Image 1 (cartoon, rainbow, N blue to C red):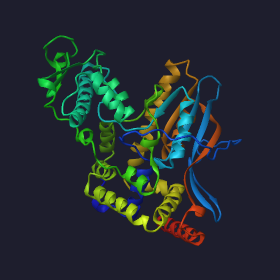
Image 2 (cartoon, rainbow, N blue to C red; image 1 turned 120 degrees about the vertical axis):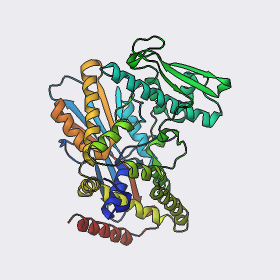
Image 3 (cartoon, rainbow, N blue to C red; image 1 turned 45 degrees about the horizontal axis):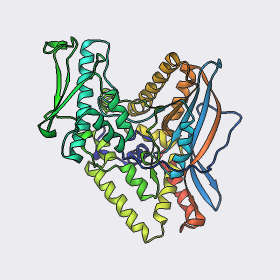
Image 4 (tube, rainbow, N blue to C red; image 1 turned 90 degrees about the vertical axis):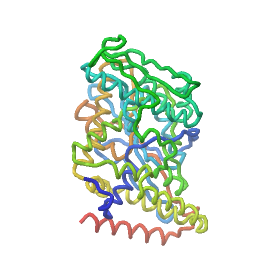
Length: 441
């Protein structure tokens, strides 16, 4: 079991790795970044299991973290190209502008985002499964209605008003709400609001589509009195990823990428699926969720120190932020560190966070290949830690081969613009590498 009290040095590093390359949560959207030239180079041969994140140094001048975008083609030349677009969840805003252009050039984008329970829509192969998934999507919609009421002091007049509200806050939320408009039998879920916007009722008529009934035929209702998961109601929760980005003068991915695109499709687990998968592996998501979200005591402490760092760094001409960037560049470009990081949370952590979530993407891609024959290109937009395994699945299961690659700068430390000296930079890098060697023994 994961226990916040026994997080050792490697587990602290593992937490940092998860912040940088793990699942991303909700965040209000800002304007997408402008596009400007960044590192981009094709290669003649691409190894499907090669790294998707690396450090690049111009000795005495710059050290940078880069992420890769690799294009795969079907071995039999029949089918769409697939582009694995890796991303760092915090980076220079220019990176997100460049990646936005790559994504927008594809017919479909399958993106990473662990969704609230019910956000994948209702369905199932039996009436019992359809009833259960219907209740989940209705609770998901209720969570959005609670957020609306927190802002507007009333519930939405109809679900269209709710969708408009959601789209302004986070385009992904609007997409998920659209999937939650029908029940497990494909029928529209009814929404009624009363008492001047103070109460609401969501209703599905069950398997028989008739009022009343019992068992799977019974009406399913969620009201303004129904409790939903706290994950959806906590609208102003601090997020360590976003706070780390601010402390380093960088942008958070959800502030830099515009998800409001008709070709963008979420391809990931829902939170309840993730929790069940973790439980099956004997893992507890609670401490990690609270820390990353900033709601637990360790999370609140981390947020406090990140904010304090921003204030103190002002008096040191940014050298603290630059030093932290160097630390991250060294950590995230070290394959052994990334592998060891996942193991610190338990043997099953990587199987769930990487393997099982990646398989969902490959399964969604398989459906596209089978049913949407006119699609000529698909981008898979995930954290860099996912991509080596994703590439292997794409090659082994679907018969694709690598064809080309590009590298993009996520962020860098430029000594011409930094208070850090070349000697300090090299000393810090040597210290980090020495610590990494000691930890890997």
